[in-house]
Length: 88
Image 1 (tube, rainbow, N blue to C red):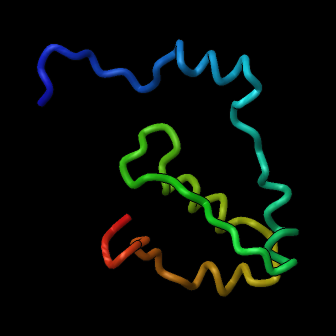
Image 2: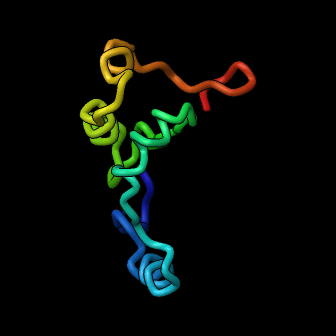
């Protein structure tokens, strides 16, 4: 492990600067079904080791979205995202 460093989930000073600048979390959940219905491809990105926004939570709400292809989406198995033949 790393010696001499204290682990923190977030840097509060950095987060505050983003929040004060208006660049903070926004929910677009209600807009995504309309985008999907209009044929707009959507990427929901979360790292597999992200402690704050984990992929399992994102997968859970994505599976609950109401849209015409919900059943097709839920029948798929998650796949590793790759770029240039390597895990991204």
